[in-house]
Image 1 (spheres, helix red, strand yellow):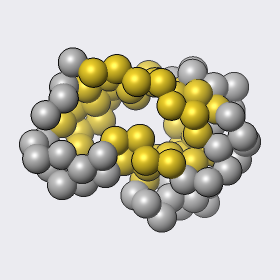
Image 2 (cartoon, helix red, strand yellow; image 1 turned 30 degrees about the vertical axis):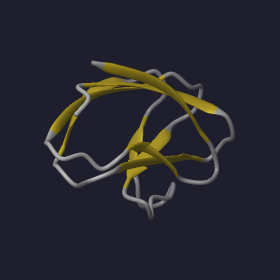
Image 3 (cartoon, rainbow, N blue to C red; image 1 turned 180 degrees about the vertical axis):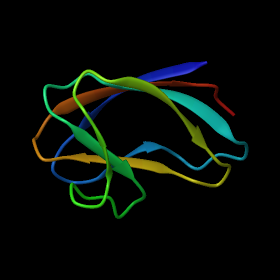
Length: 84
């Protein structure tokens, strides 16, 4: 298993890199504001909104990446997943 804490801000950041296998990840928005999930083109307008202090699991197919952005700087998110 691998766990990470990442900082999300006004510019999209990659949360999970492309892998060779399908993955389930646990995602927690530790921040005080929502973050938005999507592909490399994610914005606060087109992303999946994750309310602050939310924990859920996501299925990420092989060869896909997960990106996040926020309407505020320096928002912390945590992920837990099985490493390739």
